[in-house]
Amino acid sequence: MSTVDDPTLHKLADLGVRDAVSLAFQFTHLRARLQRELANASKSGGWDKLREEWVGTGNSVKTRVTENWLPSAPEHLRSFVSRDLENLINEVFVLSTVMRPLDQLQATTTEQVGKQFQKVSQLFDQEVSECTNEVDLGVTRTSWLGRSSGVLTHVTNNWLKTAPADLKRTVGAEFNKLKSHVESQFEARRVVIEAGADEASGAKERVDLSLPGVVRPLGSRHLIRQVFQEIEDIFFSIGFSVVEGPEIETPYYNFEALNIPEFHPVRDDMDTFYLELPKGAPGPLLLRTHTSPMQIRTMEKQKPPVRVIVPGKVYRRDNPDATHSFAFHQVEGLAVDTDITFCDFTGTIEYFVKQFFGPSVKTRFRPSYFPFTEPSVEFDVSCVFCGGSGTTASGTCGKCKGAGWIELFGAGMVDPAVYGFVGYDAKKVSGFAFGIGIDRLAMLKYGIDDLQVFFQNDVRFLKQFP
Ligand code: DAH
Image (cartoon, rainbow, N blue to C red; front, side, top):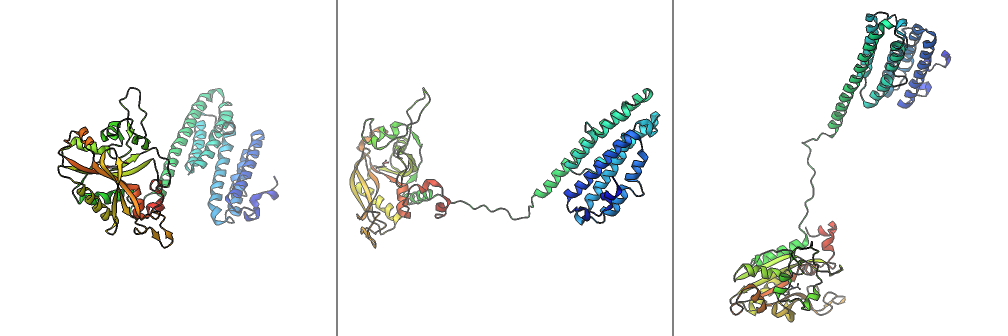
């Protein structure tokens, strides 16, 4: 290459170098040139001239890069220029050493051979110590351990294979020493770089304990839970206690003991989930269709007086729509004592309804039928939307359909037959029971017109009831 075309004669800006990539390209170019000149020297000697041309103190590549490239390099590239130059100089020293047979290096004694290996080893140490990241280390590893033109391959080809018989052992031993030194130093450096990288990324991620924490918004109780609580508070205030029971029941508690024998038609109204059980397991079992089984379980356990309410989840095979769900909520109530009358019953219900909806609502009951109560009633409440008038400003009240009353829940005096199942003397005790659908009650009180919102966990809904 004629000196006229030599890029090291020009300033970096004139070569169009403005970033690290175009700079790397210039050095790659120089390296390729070095390789060509090294190959020539291998064939025809001229090693001293080569060194002089590349790294000599006169007009060498090293001098020109230092004078032409370094001062003209943009600020952010300057450290790259000096590092790449250093690597290049190193490469010149290393390759011009290992590409020459030992005799050309005047290494003809054991001692001189040792010195040459030492020199190479020092150049290696310097190079590897300058690797500060995995990419640098990878490049250096290839230039030393690369199979076709790595430094160690050159040592094998030019020193080991051509060594005279009397030096072969020495060269072999030195070579093995160098090789294991190079390998172990690469590994050591790799560990250092990796630890440093960990430290650097650790520093980035380090937690500043003095910073204020992330405040996560607290959730609130689900509206259904809140309504359960309201109802519990009301009944608590008149001497009821709260009990809970299993959601998986036997047909005995869910039906039979409540005076609903196997082929009783009301079972048809309760499309029921029966559990699929393993062969041989005692069964059948079902998801309770109402909270009423807890009447039986409570009376089995305690003698009168009984005053309990049972909040809980119940299940029926209903298709979901605005007023139906396969899972919903009830509060069962039961009061049994020696002197409970129908008046206690209606008085208690009225007290509850007024506490829950406000004192202005009226209640009424109509005859109804449940197998476990006699008489059975359906409680209605005066429509909370139209005040019981059946009309609103826009015409007929859509909620009560003009009736002025809304059906609230079923109740009644406990059927004497039920006492027979729990060992109570039907002649001595009396009581009442009720079963309130909570979802429906919550919808009425809070003006919700789709039951499904209770189960969708939509934060926009939940947030309205903090
Ligand atoms: N268990 C009934 C149902 O789910 C509701 C009911 C009606 C419960 C009357 C009672 C009662 O305790 O007395 O449809």
